[in-house]
Length: 224
Image (cartoon, rainbow, N blue to C red; front, top):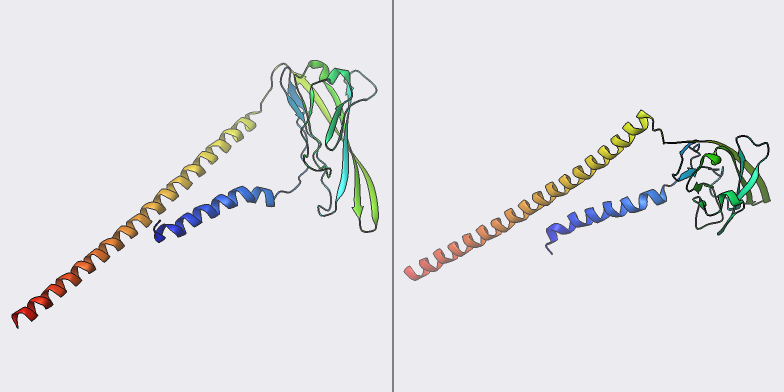
């Protein structure tokens, strides 16, 4: 491979590496409220996020979900997650709940679950409870955090106009950035290729000039 292309390829590999690693190294916890409207027959994610105030402090967390139908007075325990095991605790949700929160660690900050095959009976209030133990230098600290989601089930999902426009713009921006990157790579490749060709031409011209001068010198010696 020509040395001319090595800096270019190194630059490409650098951007590829940054693109893969940046989201991982710069990930932060942000508490966002759950959506509250689900479409019957679809799957729906009940969001529940509880960020630690100090990310560097290790901890252990379990998550519980309770459900109270719209016409009921009491909550029923429907789901429990204790890394790495999840347990469905109510027959109405059997085979319909799936853990979609933090994975690969017992230090949980996202306690979301999926409800599959949503029915109108799923309308009601959901209570998400974090039972967190923090291991501080002074000792252990137990914290309980609770969040509620008021879910409404409708025949069809209603999408706000702003949400549709935002999604379209997101895809437009992604396509534009991809085309811009491809165009930049092609431009750099052509520029480097042209410079390489020009250098080869200069070397060939210089070599030809040297041969011409050498021939002239030989002719001069012969004439003498």
